[in-house]
Image 1 (cartoon, helix red, strand yellow):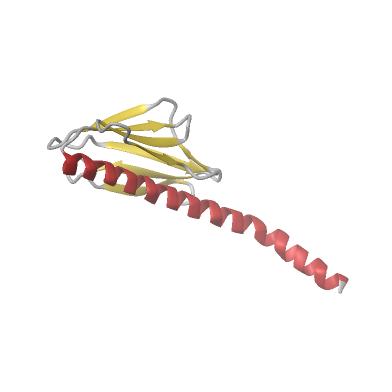
Image 2 (image 1 turned 60 degrees about the vertical axis):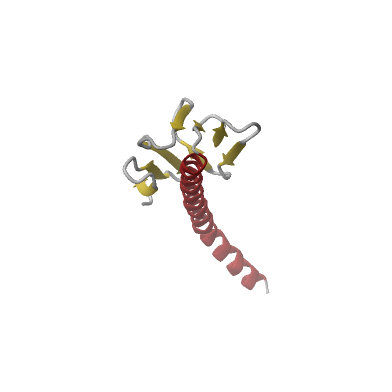
Amino acid sequence: MLVVVCIIALIAAVVAPSVTAGLDSVRLRTASDSIAAFLNAAVNRSQRLQAAIEVEISPKENCLKLYSSEPGFTRDLQMPPGVSIQGDEVRRIVLLPGSTIPGTSIEVANEHGSRRRIKLDPMTGFPHIDAVGVGE
């Protein structure tokens, strides 16, 4: 019985790093998809309501915020644990109805060094996700 428990513990110790790396990869992919959906919703809201929308990208708070001219309207998107927005300073993007979408990108990374870049295409207004660096 002791031998069986030792073998199970050894297998668990060998497999644990792979499982945590896999979970971090899933969190990064989910965060990237959430950012793309958040940006797409901001563009759609601006066009649909014919109102200016501001998107604030805050690496220090590790979140995105959406503001509108509507009283009391704000939306937040907090990154999951282990995923961080890359950069040092707060960036703001203003989406104006009927105008060209500003081309911008947001880079997120996990603790294992894998990174993804979410680009807002100025021609179509749709976000695109690209893998960057380690663990593409």
